[in-house]
Image (cartoon, rainbow, N blue to C red):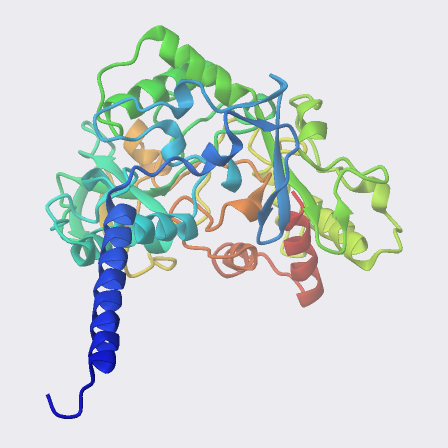
Length: 434
């Protein structure tokens, strides 16, 4: 061939072979990433996590303290309990205060093209959606990926004081005979000092205290979300005992240092020594007058949280479990997170009608009202623990608040709190330090 020497031809053939080899390697790597089993993120700890091991988050570092001496990662909590490859740890990971965030869900999706066990059709926007391709799965699981919410719900409670008369579901699944409730997973931490209420809507608590409710929830999750057979009493006991051993809280904040230093009582180990009691937050009293401006701001935020606002409202009315922030009386509250005014466009909207008065109300989630059937319980939800908040955004039962500042502004916009810019910033700094 004119213009080609044997040397140049050999070089060209070598380039072609190299390109083909690289393409094959790339294809093989892609196939491996898409099909390889994905271990829980906690697998890097090889069986256990030392107490107070620091885990980075947006606001610093959180940690877990276990009364068992270390966090054992080999128990039933971490074992596949059903047929879809999920365990309790699929949605409750130590790196995120035993919750799971949209960022991690996005990563797991990207690593596996959406075939990780956490992506189950049970939690698709609509269970009939196509999940045959990566592109289809990304659409089907958009609520999980963008908001970190799982699909729950069922039939409206029979013999209620209300009836469901209209439904607007952007995902085309909910109807007057089928409620869909989009819920964030609850962190499985700090049970000994908080509310006995377990679920967002107290669904596992009917006639039960905290421990029995945790056992009930375990049975419901294994046979429901995990698609398994009813677990043995030994399995349930192991899972509940593990959950009861966990104490998690923020432990460091940039430019602040450790939150259990110089007399302060932040962090999980200090929390594990506290008793269940009604009262104020006093974690950072020892920092009053501290020269560090960041510490001073946290103290100011603690004061704002504990005080009655100029609007005659107080955070402590609902969050009255001392230094934990749940409601010690097990009361569920309507803070307008399910209101039509706070509705995000990807959430369903339900119109409920009072059977006696004919009054109607529109909500994105029935809350406690679908457990009790009472009209006044519609839109009421558990007051969750406030510890380790920075590790587990977004917030509220439906993930409508992306940041802690968004949480505070929700209370201003939808509940009537009034804060100055300085007070708001201090309150956010305090919440970040919990």
